[in-house]
Image (cartoon, rainbow, N blue to C red; front, top):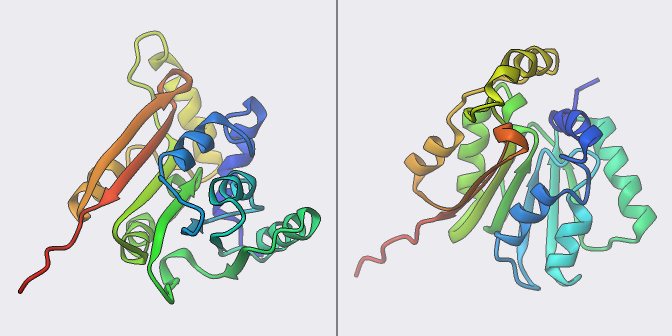
Length: 208
């Protein structure tokens, strides 16, 4: 059975860091600057922890596409959709880096998953290509702390992360900048172990 890439969320949920209504998810989704008719790609959506916040931001008019490689995760997400009567969320089981968007999205979101992906650079490339010019990409993830008083916990965090296949220091910020995104928001939380990153895809030049 394919493991959900969003399993990292199960770790953070114990401290409400990755819970469905966590402030990290809220900060990321709020800064996507969605309107009622926006189309959003929820990458490695897992069981759908972002769905409620996304629907609130979309006012029930826009559309959410949730993708995840795990059949079990997609089934949990489907049950969440049925339980709450969501009619504007579509699900696709696929390897993240292999997903091909049928139309440009206004935003893409990846929460508590990018640090556990084997092909994380390809996943970012997919997200960049799926978002329209001027659209936004948000990533919420984990990192080792650089803050005084918290750095001493890095060995423990690294040990726990290894058990869940998490690789620290991947340079997601730098990778998105190189691809052509301008940073709109970067915050660190929980002693510098969680980060919220929101970028905007640069407008393409129109040549006459």
